[in-house]
Length: 393
Ligand code: MEV
Image (cartoon, rainbow, N blue to C red):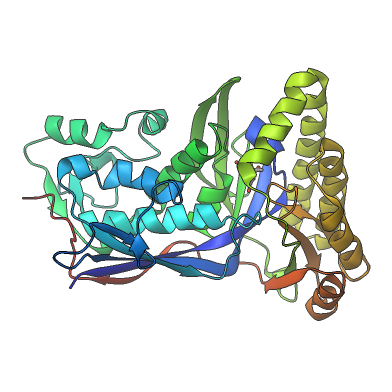
């Protein structure tokens, strides 16, 4: 029987959350904790879609449902699937669990259904994909055109051919689909930061300009209620001196969905447009932090993180539980702040003393995770007897 497993890491934002939704710069790093998605065909006579051994409920799994609409349409006779999701990223805690799930699921679905190409020249070149899901194509369309794949295939070259399995998964496509799905789940407001970090791994820098000294990945655009946003994404090769440096993540255990926090910031700015200055200040702090990161000056990185926290507190997205954990981490770390959307969820401390910092956070009531820098992005871990849906027939 066919089976595919893909996994993707969670992420931790060093600088710039919330401000990045308004086009300001930000940096996120992939963490050691991951989510794995396994797909298998359902056995004959079983319920068509199962997740975790239960009947699939689209309302409980909006990210998977949105991907299903794009990659596995029942209207096109896509067969049933069983899905298993496992991992050690706590949900709704600011560590990118939904982005990791979306990225891993989109890659697994793509492996399971194969890909059409319009030429045989270069399988890795998105320009030759018949489906059109590529950041180098008109990426805006992916947010609106549900049937893009079908129309692209119908008008595609008669020379097109079909490839299945591991090699058809793409980091760009998974990041793009992950962003599209997050945008839907967050009421139309989402930066590509989480999905791109979970897909590419390492450290990802988003900026309002194409930056030097880092590897440019692609440019993403999204039209929001109050205008169009553009982000230039880059991969940052962290200096070797990250040896001995750790991120200690403290979970408050307070449930805080990203969509609520993003809406809260949008409402605050709408009520008082002058507050966009706070967003711009976070952008300035992030720019300084990014330069320190490039220079390998981690004392300055830590200071920028702590300054970023003061601004996030002012914006109203911190909470007493986060403040308690941040205060507890401060004496043994270079800097500490909330990470992700805030309102609960997690804080992160940059530290050379992970054991002491972790103990201090635990004593203050948080549950900790420790991560090094430089973690892998999306991987296809198992890929046997593909496709699960043969669209070539
Ligand atoms: C959530 O991890 C980060 C936010 O900036 C939202 C986003 O970037 O879409 C709060």
